[in-house]
Image (cartoon, rainbow over all chains, first blue to last red; front, top):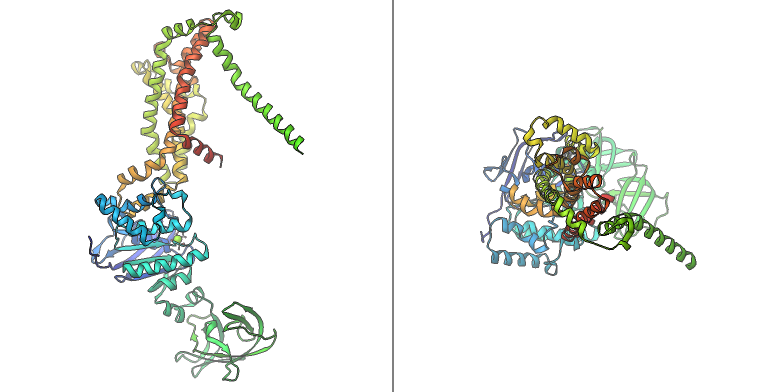
Length: 351
Length: 270
Ligand SMILES: Nc1ncnc2c1ncn2[C@@H]1O[C@H](COP(=O)(O)OP(=O)(O)O)[C@@H](O)[C@H]1O
Ligand SMILES: [Mg+2]
């Protein structure tokens, strides 16, 4: 057991989930997770992230016909205790009747590791999570951040071949969340274990996921790298869910979208006709002396420290959001010339 | 201001003392009567242990029977109530709520009515009707809901489902989870429930009075018998015996589960 088992690849085939009360939480879906990959499930609350994670974990079984594979072994009928996974729950699920060290040792004990091996491994994990001082503490004497560290250590201790996280940081405050996220990121990279990370926070998903699965209403809306999801969203839902997106409609012709306020360059050849394009706030800048694509009037400006967010009217149906680096000193109502720095996407399925 | 606070303090103190007196004085007098040579003359007539000896010679059988019944009742409640509470906690559904209400029924219905129902059901089975087991059935019916409620409250407050999922993710099968996670965490509820069950069983009168036969008297039934047929001092001495029995029991279980009892009380208050 000392040399690490090679990382596990996961495959789901036609997995749907209908609950006893008739709730259709997941439409039939296929999903492949590469060995050693960290996959993030991202989506609004209630979209089925936890349900999908529980199918992979073995805490729930898919509707008949759905199958789950770990490497080339089908595990669909196996309960979680026979799948060798490690799981970190949003509510921590630490055992209140045991100390921190006993919690961490639990999985090792279940696997019948001898006492001295258990002790070494627990010490190793306490050090890794920097919670040595807490070893003898009861769970109810720990803060939220400390509990999450213990939960992580407990899940990792038996060297699972798959790590599952269900919104592990949601209950913590922003600063702690950021620190623990970095820690989890380092940990996953060091361990090289295949991992699935559920979150409704796009920043968390972007930072941790090698790939992101964006979910909506029990379906997979898009799978891709953070870069693909952000810059080439499959649909409007994905575009809106991962960051801010501007929409402008007009007439598409010769690789440009023409509208009363000016014209916008397109990132690929698109059939001529009425259409809509999308671009992110940070792809726009104040034109200054260079080429101007659009003209609008300044409706509001917010200084955010590292950048300034401008709302510009007179271009789209809604105000266009523009993020520029550094402070901007313009009175409201001023005409602002804008340049689109990287070509915009034509929106699919625009209405 | 301080005058006012002082006044309030003394008023509250007086109220507390009065309440305690209201609770304790009758029992105190009864205890006194139990060791008085002649209650007509009051304590000035002299103190004696004669009545207590007499009670013991007449009614020691009822004391033993009550204790055996209470222990048997506790065992039955543990075997039935703890698994039932666990199942209800793991499957919180409308049906589970209905079952919970249903087992509360013998608490809501007067003991006499439950006893009557039992007599109608089992009355024809003479051997059973005449044995202490018949009373045991009544006591289990009456006390089981207290055990279930007490355990259920603790299991619900610790979210036993998620804890078990945590244990399962670490490789623990159902029995191991039960032994290492569910039962240890349910212990406060089990102890509090046990305390409740034993004291309820030892003190139960209504139902037991209907269910007993002259050969299966319990302590409270014997006490009623003593009041009805003996002199007041003997009945009072019986009370002394009853308290001597139940108070150490209460203290013992309170010591065994100090956090449990206050814990459930606090949760019950929410
Ligand atoms: N045990 C259950 N019984 C019935 N419906 C459920 C159950 N668990 C989840 N659901 C429903 O399934 C949908 C998806 O839930 P979930 O996977 O928890 O979403 P998420 O984790 O993305 O917030 C929701 O509509 C939720 O109400
Ligand atoms: Mg969820």
